[in-house]
Structures are given as structure tokens and as C-alpha cells.
Length: 142
Image 1: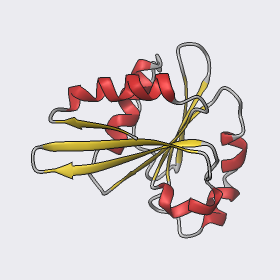
Image 2: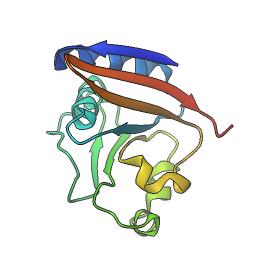
Image 3: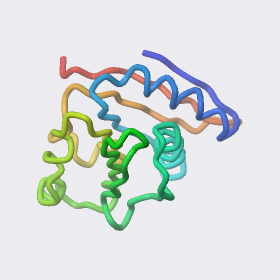
């Protein structure tokens, strides 16, 4: 497991670089309380991947679709408002995550735990008195 402690949002740059260099399967499950910084991390990842569109939280849309600078899909999911895992399947979640070159960032993955893709990177963001702690761990289902 790799951990980062940051005090300022600008420091997400180093976390994003680590994730981009170590996320072979391009599936990132972002865990954390409301306001922990999941969307901020998604925005930084998109920036580093060359997404030119304005990246926002997909809280109401459930998924926002972008294109990276290299032309790969970048999908940003937010499952905070869904009630059942079937809702994720109904929007075609598996067809998004099955795409070979797609980046998939998933906020509130605990709401769809049994349908999350394996392997993936789990990123836990904890709020500290003076910043955030981000814990990153590859998950291969074992």
C-alpha cells in the first residue's frame, strides 16, 4: 500500500502522477466521505491526462464522459444517489469498464461493491485535521 499526506489541493499532482503510473487496468475506486476530495482528485487526473473539457462532479448525471489528450475515454462515475447496484448495471456500467483503453474513476464505489471490476486500484481519502491522507492499494480480488 502507498500513502500520501497532503495539506493543499495543489499536492494532488503527485498523487495523480503515482496513480497514472501504477494503474495498469485504469479502474480507480475512490472512497471517502462527502467533501474528502474525490472529485478534486478526479479533476487532477483528468488534467494530467489532457482532458480539455471542464471536469465536474457527475452527482446528478451519474457518469460524465470525456476524452483524454491521446483520445482515450475518461469516465467519471458518482454513485452517491443510486439506491441499488442494478441501477449501475442499467446505465451500462459494465460496458464502460470493459473498454480496454478507458479510464474509469468511480466515486462512492461502496454503493456497488459486488459489481466493481477486478482488478482495480482502491483509493481511500481520509480527512485529517490539517489535510488529507490518501491510501492507495491495488485490488485483484484475493
